[in-house]
Image 1: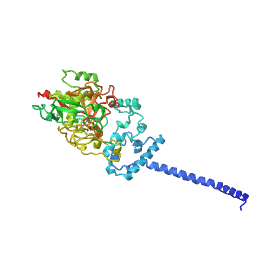
Image 2 (image 1 turned 45 degrees about the vertical axis):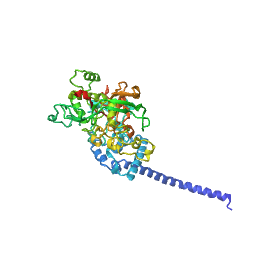
Image 3 (image 1 turned 135 degrees about the vertical axis):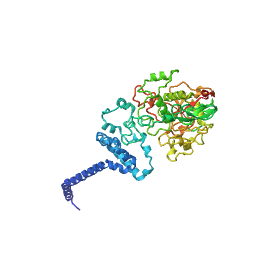
Image 4 (image 1 turned 60 degrees about the horizontal axis):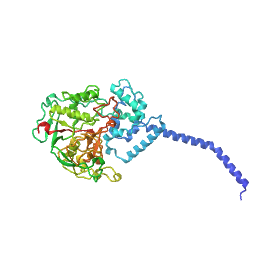
Length: 526
């Protein structure tokens, strides 16, 4: 048996030996620790270079568009790198490195598990995607002076408004400056380069202008030719009739404001085959544009005068209303209800006919095209909708809805030209989806209950907001049902407008809104 004395001595010797080695172990540990820290730092530095970013983001939009952007080519000589925009500033150490870790893991996962050829890069370049990856504090870190030399008066107005209302608006710099980090030739901040006759916009040869409006002698489809412009568009003769307006409680995604279902009769009318296009709206703008920021009171007084022979039209908008998606036959968007009504007033004056916005009853009657189903084509909204728990496992059907409707599942997050869809039974295109359309009615959730069970040519005149119908390019299939109702959100849609008073012509915070016109047969002697 080993004595306790010997055991204690042996233990003591081991402790002395350990403590003699401890400085060495500590030194080795310190060196290794410093090496790990240095390696991590060098790795972090390397993966913060533009070259390392380009390894994962293998598509032309990133590198090529970045190199020709104002963040690289500018008078200051400062070259803004990927991490300068896509990560919080380094002085926010915790936010910077946690965001870097999260994005790095996401990029690495995508690089090894996904094929970049399958990505919709145009969609990823849109504002809705960009705001997720551009921390606002990074913009403010570089641009501490919001009023640099050379800023335009409109820029001063906008930046003052941002400076005073940043927290209330929850507005990010990228919302207005989408083109600065990655050049987009279709997006021009603060310039109206697509308007015919302005800043490089195509100028139409005056010899191509129509001299007279189309003469209508019977209740048949016709093509309107607008005198003094090169604009023409198709009008569809919609026969009068009766229908069941609204939706029954058993219809999928039915909402309370779609009831009670009523028997509604509408008189015959002409309706535009498609929504008012940019070509049509710019013709109106070019002939009626108000110089400067005309006071609303002056505009209202002029346009409400029955003896007026010249319409006061829109003032120049901030930014570019078509969002860089293209003009031409795409539906005109972002105008206010008042702007749409003024367009109708101008069109009436130009053609000698009575053009106006459709009533809500006319709109739904036309959209149904003689059908009584949720859509004017076959299909159950539950099958088309992307809503619901099961959609995480089973994809929604996209046929036949995609043949007739531009909506959230097929729009690529932007409006499309009318040729992208088929017409409804009346020959009307884009009644559902693409852009929401203004109606002549004021909105009330109880509007249907306030009238008789059977009614002829109803028009709601009480309410604060206007009815909009049809859903738009961001909508779920549930919200492009024929009976689905919506309304303007005037103050919300003007939230970021820096003008005082705010614009009566252009909305700053809604893109999927437009309109189509109807013509009264009585105005052409029918």
